Each structure stands twice: as structure tokens, then as C-alpha cells.
Length: 423
Image (cartoon, rainbow, N blue to C red; front, side, top):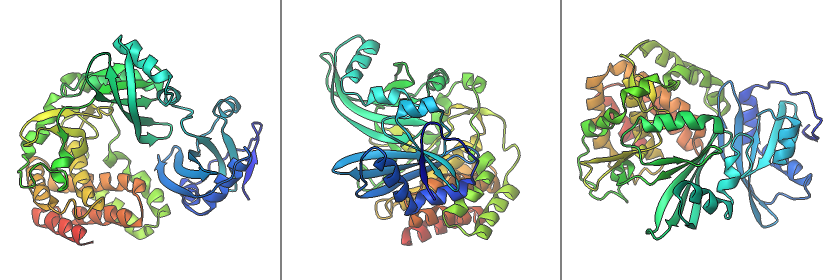
């Protein structure tokens, strides 16, 4: 039985994360939404789950798009614990189920991202931007690109500063306590676009110059589909990270945390034995120390790299939130795992990816231990799998992880790409 509790509700208990995730993915989530909205005099029409975000050992949050009497709402249901005061401030609803307590709130509210309300306020945002730039700002349009509840949000705004031409800027909203460290990480990367701290966890960045590397890999947007992308050029982007990054807190790599993802993968329908075999294979092939600690990006993948029209010049590196000390093999594995994942978004659009993949794998295999790199690549794919859009993409991530883990050769990688593009 599921019930709505008032602000005095007690009895929080740790429920198995996998079981809660299954609940949030099921049709019973509609009952949760209906029950919560009815307490505010609203009804649920059409609804759909947009994404679930799981942090093993921490909270699980689900994002839903809901039509309530013609009003479009973005609602969050999370296992995060909230105090009575937090619930009141968010106008959140507590839901008690046999699996434990859940909380529901509406975007742009967020208990950990107070700046999100300011960024979404059409009157407050120009004033906020004027304070950091010292000139009038006219906001023409805005779009929410990323929302990870309790963690971060990213908006793109088209605006005009004073008499300047119209431009795009990106606003990242994070936990205020993280702002200082994120600015330090950003400042240690010479290729990162200019960034300003607007307070309340709001970070404002100029748009990166050039085009994302993914546009060169995607046939509908590639300036020249026949272009040869040089892996050495791409990985030279890491040289733009200064030695000061070694003094920053390290990111926990996918290889270090993948073993905790077993229950999450099971909850999405992956057979227990299949997941256990994958995790065992990763564990057996990982080197405890694949090299010295070096300055790393931490989220190094094609969408975060900007190049020129010919892909011969590096223009920018973005998303520097995880810059710090780490192993070069983890940056390599992150990059390669994301390359392997691209066909699952559009098999036809990425039909020409095979030759790039083979070239990058040959380059990376020469620079790292092949078995260790394969294990780290598989680990990245498994930690990304819970965020996939549906069963087909989920299967792509699992089967690709298996293939890479068991066929760490150029021929094996080509086979992986061929099989994935057929499916």
C-alpha cells in the first residue's frame, strides 16, 4: 500500500535500491504521481518516465514528464531523505510505500540546487548576469539540456550583452558547496572556455569555439565524412591540464565503483549470472595500478571535445567538473566506451564509425595494457547502462561490454562494431 504522509511522518528505512528502482520504472509509478498530485488538487493525465539516476549506496531519483489538465510538469521522485523544513520549502510530498519513504517535488525546485529556481526565473536571470558582467543583458531564449536531480543542471541561453552580438552561453547549476572546487578544476585546464561564478552554485560559461567531435563522427552533421581523425591530436587535449590538477580531489573511476552496480543492472532485467560474469571478468583483468597518477579529465569523451571543421585543431575542452589526479587508462577507457555507445543512439547516423573506432583502439592499445583497457572500457559501459533510454539500448551497452571484455583485439573491436550496427 502506498500512502501520502504529512510533514510529521516518520519511519524512514533503507529499502533495497534495486527494488525501489523497479517500482519507479513500473506502472505503479503512475499511482505515486496520482496520489501526490491529488493532495494538491491536481490530476495526472499522460505521464512518462524520462530517466532514472542511481548512485549505488546513495539515492535513486526518477524524472517524469506529466500532463496535468493541460499543464506540463516535470516531477522528481527520489529516495533522498528530507527534513520537515526541507519538505515545506520545496512543497514536496512524502510517499510511504512497503519499500520505504520517497519524496516527490516539481522542477525547478531541488533540495540540493537552490540556484535552479533563479536560473529558471525570467526576471531574476538578467539581473544575475548583469552582476557578473557589469552590463545590461537581454535573454532571448533558453533551454534545459541536462537535469540530474540533486546533482546538477545545465541550461543553454541565447542572449545579448550590452551592444555585443547575440551569443550562446551555458549555465551549470550545482550544489553551492561544490562551486569552489569546480572553479579550481576548470582553471587547471587551459582549453576550457571562460567561466564565471554567479553564486548559489550557478556557473556561467561562454560557448566553446569550434564543433563537437561527435559532429565529425555523425554523418548528418560531419563537415567531411571522409576526414581522418588523428587519435594523437585528440588525446593531446589532456596535455592542456596543468600539474596543479594533481592537488585536487580525485574522481572515483568507473573501474573502482562498477562492482556496486550489480543490483542496479539486475533491476533493469539483466540476468544475474550474466552480470556476475561481467563483473568477475572485469575484476580479473584490471591492473591494480595501470600507471602513475597524472592530470586527467575524468569525463573525457567525444562530446566534450571541440575541434575545427577539418578536425586538425583542438579548440576547447568542456565539462571539467571531474578534472584531477587519476590514471590515463581511465580517460582512454571513458573515451572509447562512449565511442562504442554512439551507434545505440542512431545506428544509421553512426554507420561510418567503425573505421574511427578501429584506429582509436589500435592507438590506445599501443599506449596501455590491452586487457586492462578492455576491462576499464567494459566498466564504463556498465556504469552508464542504468541511464539508457530503453531495453534495446540497455542491451547494446551490456553486449558491447561483453564483446570488448572478451575480444580486446582490433579484429574483435571491428566485430563488435559490425554486430552493433546490424542490430
